[in-house]
Length: 302
Picture 1: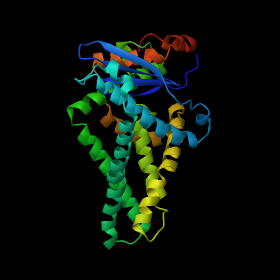
Picture 2: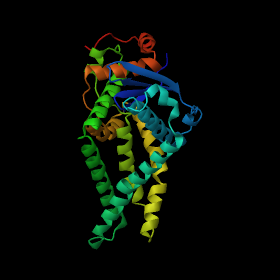
Picture 3: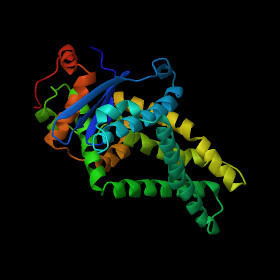
Picture 4: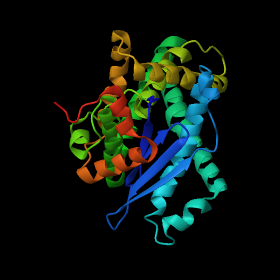
């Protein structure tokens, strides 16, 4: 069996795993049982995924949509109005679109407009556009780190980060050739090069250098160009994450370290119940036993 790179994300009290067009959401229900829902993506991105840079924009946009839909699905299990299995097909697309638009506006305000205008406060000491862009990038990274730290202090997000850790540990367990058992997953690393956290951090780093070359006398135009360049920056960042996920090149490993370090904030060590949920999500979309047999995997960590 060919391993194309299974990926996933944490959701409310659960894990979503994706392999090709198949994706499964496993949720630990209030009664202690694990509910697994397997679906297939509505869009076949196989052709787009063969086009460098374009696939990065597509993957970023579709991941946002899929992530939000699975998050809403998992959260529905903990709403009192209706059971989740009756509400799964009732998710209002307009509501999801509204949340995406609102999230985009808030993100642009917090991570684009705020650092941009905050950096311009230093214009009384320097009129160098590149120095101001560098200061803007530093402020943006600091805001991002503060945001991750702050949300990580809330109880709900702490648990999401623990499930995020379970997701990474399950994938690492398989990729290192070990059977997908709770014991083996527990011993696996919770850092992974293909993580969305690393992707976002690479976007932040690349934007620092790209924004240095934006020239305009209008501050509004400068900010607008920054927003317009986000898809291009995301496309380049995706290509790096894609390369990092399958390369052990020294330079690539060095460039991956900041993102891997940041994952210590966005992942936490999961408990065994969370690991079981992660395993259930993997097994719904990927035959890891056949994969390990094909590559001659081992039973346990040495």
